[in-house]
Image (cartoon, rainbow over all chains, first blue to last red):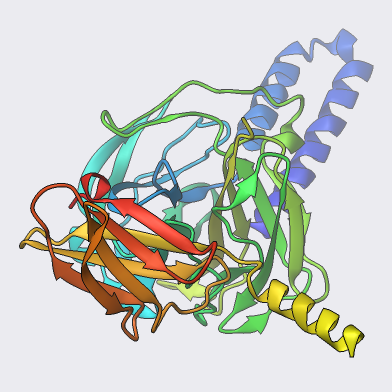
Length: 293
Length: 99
């Protein structure tokens, strides 16, 4: 994805040049070119928003044990301008008190309706009865991104806690791409911060590029539908915020608003190719900030 | 000597900076399971547990290696008590324990 961005930059710069030329040569009836250029730029910019694999459940800090529902949707959580068809799920499991349970069989195919289109997604139910942390990990089948002629696979973590006893939230699983939290992802006040370490098979990834997006809408669990935008971004760099880890693969990000925040470390995974094409194997973690009221 | 006692007192105090936690669920087979723990993640293995009814203990046990206790669901109202010492008791009402 990094490569594509550079490409977008180049194109953007190129189109800027074109616009410049247009301005100079306006007398020569270049109006048409100008419109075309603007249209291309707009299209390219929209594809620059980050893809995020969601492993969504409405509350990650449960007062007591209960059956919870998940929605597994591949989307752009801030802008919701396009929902992608999930290609499948390779692995889905949970860890509670160091015990791993396979959950792949609990997945059901659904059609999820974003604000602009509908796409293939999954849902699942889980009995989060045991006290402590329930650390969920899902590895989707790589998704072919036509615009980039490459595959994307986001190994995604969501951590749900029951009754406040910490057990597994900080476990390092040695995944191909992984964000290991240093802050409990379910126990953050609005305005608090989240710290994590980017790793690949247990090794830190220095200066990893991390995309951050706010889930800018309510998720209608019953009707498998996304709600309207909560906030507007003043400019594109606020939609997908890109930060970088330090030399030890660590990063910290303050969460200015209650709700869910997704962190995606780009292309840090050990697998670099899928079906003969480039693969961006990313590490995603979802973090929830709670309102202070 | 006074100093040592003071330090000891402080140390003891810091041991209890965490809070006790208990969560119970109905197994649906006439039994209830309660799990105990502490906010710092430490185990509740060996911690005292009892079930009270009308102010009387009708069941007493210690939390297992997995910090759990399973007991027969009493008829009528009852309270499950996780007793980790003074100021560290957690009470869960039977009516709040669901499947």
